[in-house]
Length: 204
Image (cartoon, rainbow, N blue to C red; front, side, top):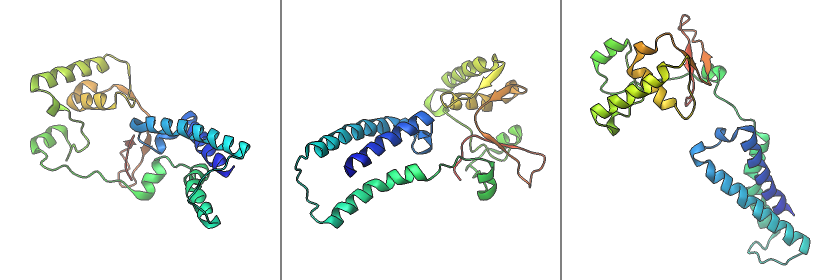
């Protein structure tokens, strides 16, 4: 019966994380299919364990002692307990204020680029130019920029993040004055009272 409860707990926890939209706080969503596979397997194994318990089917086990059985169940239950009891913490301004932030400088930054862009480094600049020839890259970026410049409000999502940001970096003057919407937060650094930092992703 305990095995059934543990497996059913895994199934219900995965369902909850999926429906609540919190699954991306635990895993990279590119591998979300693994979570769904484990959810289905947990459900199937839970049904098997329920059948074994109800029918009192004798099963063979190498865990003969009571301590070994309890230890194995406890190890399986630990991730479940953590998932159900420990609250998730999203990256926000309080987290940044408490732990700070750091943008490491990129190596070999061109001084001419620094002067023209008014920055000391463009470490976070998306760059897919290595995957195209020069003319093909310029054509792709021009097409992407035209698509978003024509929009009154530019929505940045998980799907178009790289495309939009690279277009903005390549054609900053053309995007000046445009309204951009994305999910993130604002951080006011005490040492830069006249500036605001807009964070979307970060590793603290």
